[in-house]
Image (cartoon, rainbow, N blue to C red):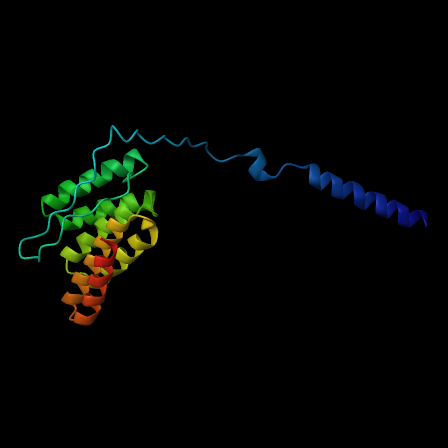
Length: 177
């Protein structure tokens, strides 16, 4: 009987000691990162719509976008750089800048829409459709942003020869406008 009590006491002590020991993550915490608060909206430049290349069917001006185009100053800078590259017709560089911004804010519908626009202008129809759909999934209550995404989807489908799909997408865009 005393043998059983000794084993029970020993196991209890070992269990309590294991619970009291710090784990590696408690002893060596990761680096402390500090989130930079977003700039007040008065300081931000409103997001500018991307121009279309010559020969592309004209689209209506992008409707109202979310009040905050980006939370991070780095994303705002990358969005501005992408806009400049886009206006300079360097679509590949604009795509790279937007991809970097999306790594920082992957749920930003404005970034996904801009990326869809670039892919549309590059003739990458499937990617343009996927990215516009992703933008719609994050757009929430911003009907104007969602309407513009459906216009992108309509143009990409039309370029693929899917006239019925394009008509359906245009109908959805009109319903949101």
